[in-house]
Length: 410
Length: 146
Image (cartoon, rainbow over all chains, first blue to last red; front, side):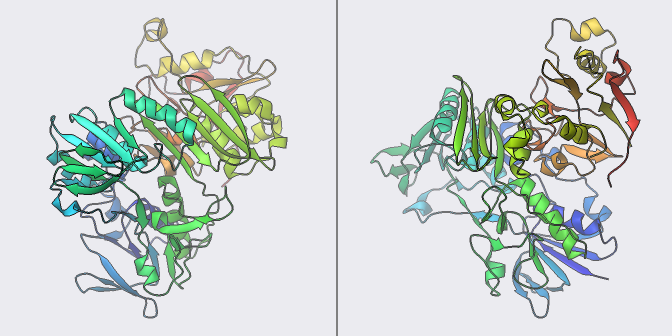
């Protein structure tokens, strides 16, 4: 009987459990979870702050998930080392777990720059875990002034969740625009205006350099008073378990299309892993939830002796703020097709006869048709792109493609 | 399993399927009360142009990318049917971003509405099929790919 060990208990871990069980119903599965709770939907922590979901709805799977999956969950425990020769994982309490196949799903951690005087700030948080959301919730009241360092996906979702619950939310970022990892300047400007209309304040191209108690001293010379500080500067993949045994690590743990690391018997998946990006052709950490699940699932199948390749990961995001949705995918290279109104933007990027990327703000209808064009590398010459660029519709596909899509089981 | 299929040669583009869908899922017993003077949020949508029309609803994929991608655990597959849990959906639209068929759209309050084959609503069988005047939409078993 095979022994499977999974380090980490997020989305990739659940994918790995389900991948293993799709092949091997009897092998033992042990999941090591640093957080003291079953797997939950991590992106929902901002929706929890916002009051759009409840704690009882935040679990990723049902109450009996681990027992139904015959997986043992070790909560509140941390893997501190791997012995790849003996095939064992050492835990922080001294226990040593043997494995035949191991999956590292350790995710990422908030990166906290060494700000001067950060230790003098009484109420400071990062925003990556349910515990951090619950801690923030305890520390705020209707009079709180919140300063968020970082106008990326995490910082802004936190800001949205807090808007309306506190007196003010100010977001600063060294970048000159919001959501700089997914939006170009024009799209970011549209979103920023929308966020400002809903009460957020921004200090862009500026960041805190020093803290003293409840005051942030900014690079621009300004000072910002706050009651609660949230640090959302960025994240770093948790790779040390693999780098510690000489495995190949770049920005993330390098994996092949079967999610195998360079170390025999060890797989990696999710935000800690650096896999293939089908849109750029290179390797990249694709720290998004769908990717984590699919990588985890592929890892699990391969760990259990099956065969599953995951080589269709692309960067993509769907994120809404106060009712305005921004979707993005792929890379923004090549020729741009644009449609704009005061409240929406569509930008499609084409190169080498392929759709390579898009940004859609306030235009989300059937966006998955565009996403699949990128993911599946469908040649523009095989579709009516004049129609498709105006409207994401399968009507732009040839009848025989539509027959395949809609005429039988898929 | 039985799924909803459309024959685009027979589709008239009349959009009755959209209205029958919205009515069947309204929870109301009177079609006028359910639909008149209200924005309609069907789970099937007629697409096409002046030459060809066809109705698109969830394909209930064997390997559903929407379920794998849902950030809220709101989409699940039960007995082959992909279901959306409105209490869990937070309206992030990630499923819209990944569905290659363009089969998903949010409802009035921003949470996802999707075809669940009418198996649990007042119609009990796909209302789009039942009401299609030209039998362009059918509910039947076709070859499984798996």
